[in-house]
Length: 503
Image 1 (cartoon, rainbow, N blue to C red):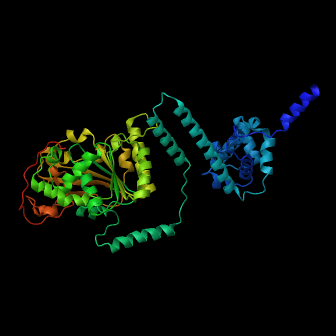
Image 2: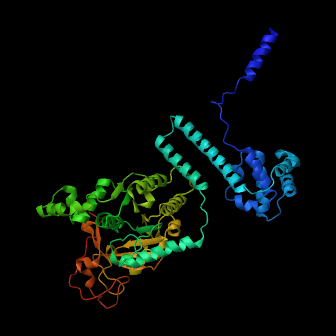
Image 3: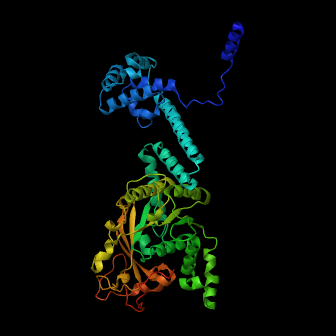
């Protein structure tokens, strides 16, 4: 009987282990040994792996402590070898925990050179990333089984965590200057070949294009203003110029209005029909004729509208990548920045969250290599100031975060002095029916003002030249900033209603 039991135990020991239900975390212990050994025999080896490896990249806790000691010695510009690493571990009280001086010496004895250290470090980094992904998916899976967790919030949290993980592990190497010079020369040559001197996407406004050379790839442009200044109207007017007139693919993310409301305003803009009439349907025959005539310009326009409420910056990133990949989108507009959120991340204040959003938008513009235009609110500082200049918005008026100003390549203000019952500028020029586009920050060029015609009944901004409105002379001579002045006022504009837009 005893012999039979011994045979059964021996049989069980000889059976192969079934690993189907038991997985070891991704690891490469022998490679970790080789990297640590190489770091202790080559003083220049750490510079090769320091951007790839962190203490937590190592699977073995002993190796994490040894790598920390090597890192600290390098940061202090002290020699790194078996003796100095052993001494540092002893000083930190972890020498016996890693296996004593014998284990440290054993690591360095296993390698002859650091010839393959970069390749070995990449293996360790990949294994570490795989472990992080396993941990990430495990947390998400556990929360998904929890009936009390909101699935939509969980999706945004998962997207945010995955984005953070990808950012931490994304490395961009340096570039020798020659290919960058070639790229820069191509841009200059393209501008020289273009009679308009544009290197970016045309705004549809001549003087604004003169000052900006068009919206540039990888730029974050902030378009800010107080309520009722016409920020959305300005954005929609440009969307019509870019997507409908120039047929440049673009996306419009509207967090404030539904897609139908947005398209109604586009129809009002393109067909010159009052928004109130489009809302109530009380159109005259000539207005129906204008719709028939101009609506074809909007049909089939490469304009993609997303009206997801409470859009997170991580959702935007996912959708933007798909729009660029599938539809060749060249520009993105967001209305407006303060309505976005950064779900999945915790912040001490709203200012910190807005800072994260603006920084993420700038990163997305660089990643996709397209311009991103984001509308932004201003704080109430403008309302408390007096005089013509007092009502002009300033960079310090940007709402909720100074980081917006810091992250933006360009900051524009939409300003209608007429709204504040200011009908002349400092040079005596008539400002009724006009809007100032104030370029307050421009990393790549000049700042200044551009004067446009604002037609509030059609939610539309126009070039003054389009209706011969640029031919008014200043009342006491002089010239408006960013605008040429010739001739006399042959077509005066009556004061417009200062109330909110019709819809």
